[in-house]
Image 1 (tube, rainbow, N blue to C red):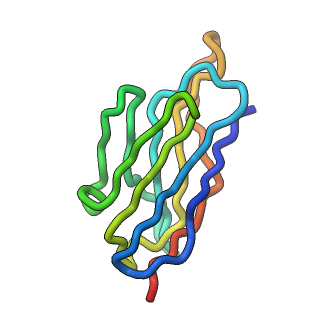
Image 2 (cartoon, rainbow, N blue to C red):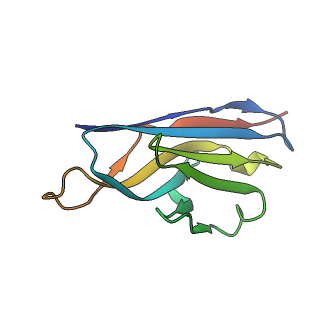
Length: 121
């Protein structure tokens, strides 16, 4: 069994910062790409950022320059540092990871249950 658990969400004023964390646990042989997605009220889930196992990063255009994704492979953790937050960043943020549970099992995609980020004055 593999679990992804997010933390760090909350209420923040416009212009403020938050740092999200997501820890993977369970039977894990290797974690490949780790990503953050978000889903705003009434909208579809959208990709925010990805970090590869080799620390290459990619960002959705509105996140580039404001958000920083990083990971700690030893801790099986991915982070999302969010700065200069805007009301339109309000959403449930989900962690996503491509995980190989054993050397014999194909890589599968796993999701966390999400953490709510609210940007409001």
